[in-house]
Amino acid sequence: MLHVLYIIVAVAIATSLSACSFGHREFLNTRFRSESDVALQIDDYGSFWTPQIAAQLLDNIERCSKTTNTIVVLFIHGWHHNAAMSDSNAIDFAESLTSIRSTLDDNVNGKPGIYRLSREKLTGIGDVRIFGVYVGWRGKSLPMPLDYLTFWGRKAAAERVGQGDLRDFLLRLNSIYKQRNDDRTGGRKTPFMGMVTIGHSFGGQVLFKAVSSVFEQELAIGAASLDPKMEAALPQQISGFGDVVVLLNPALEAYQYQKIHELNSRNTYNRIQTPRLLVLSSATDSARQIFFPIGRAIGAVFQPPGRANQRAMWNQALGEYKPQVTHALEVVCNEKESTRAFDPNTYVDNPCGVVNFDLTNVPFIGGVRLVPTQAKIPYSPFLVVNVSGAVIIKHSGIFEESLRRFLNDYIAIAEGKQMLFADPEMRNCPENVSQRALE
Image (cartoon, rainbow, N blue to C red; front, side, top):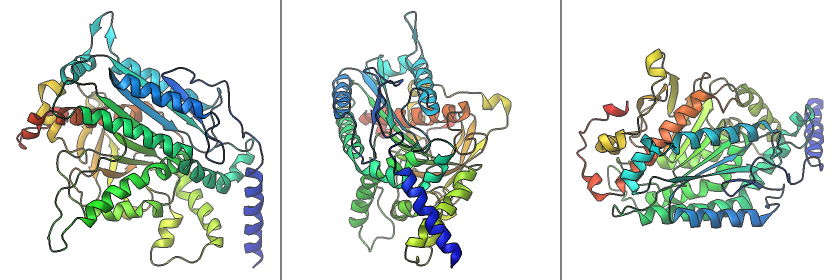
């Protein structure tokens, strides 16, 4: 009984420590202070420190996306991080934006590159505007190494952040995204809007809390419309949130994802569907494999006992609970293939190949292969992936070149499919057209 008392005291001390005022402020000097690159900062209660910044950003994105191709890349950091100029996540995300712009805005000395030419072919406009959004919250609430005592306080704060002003902002952003893509129906040469949202660690908890209801609602509506007498479900299409939501080593319980997992397992999809939620968990992430279960087990002292497999899902992080894992991401050992990049000319040279491409089973992309680990659902919008430690290094190695290369190519194909499907003729592509050009 004494050891239980020690645990309760430790949890109480850690919670009180993380509730102090250390680091609870708005950082006025950040790396993201322009119309295109913005830091959205949120307090511990889930409110924007400066709501005007979020409102202005939405206005800029809405205005820009009406006239030119627009891509929004939003990143939410995790534990031990914030929006300070010196924060390592802020530095790495800023460098990633520079790399993305260099790749996509390829118009050197007036000579358009393959990405620009592809955009001109598909949308009639070669230009592209990229908005980088860094979501800063109080992931660091004590100086190191004391910050390791704040697991429970920061987990609760992440949930509050995901349920506050950020959720409203993301839903409004998604509304703009859907309107722009609705404008493209019928194959009109109109601007394309892309949107990718990424959350790491407790930032994955923030993002999932903010957008999971969008997925659950679509899945529930589809399930309710099924005829129980039918042997198989009719193909459903999940529009989800933006192009794709990416959770990197997410620090949230597998239990939170179970409803999506169960509903998705009852559905079927066709080639129109693209991935909408991509969970990537490193095989070498000891923080989530060892310490996350310990943290949840201590917290479970205050919870009623779980039934059946509830406790297992509650104590394990999303991506670590094996029944939910759908894929493995493995490094391609062949040196020639490992450096080969996706060719955007494929959008023009083999559009039906892009349309038919099933992103749930990818023999080669960005130096890796994505393979199902269980009976796969073709064209499934939900992938939970166990990732080689060479691609995501431990818990925090999320800005490595190998992962960046994979995500760039994977998302490019998904966005390319959506751009092509705006043309009704593309929906008539024969299903036997080869995908080999993309592999």
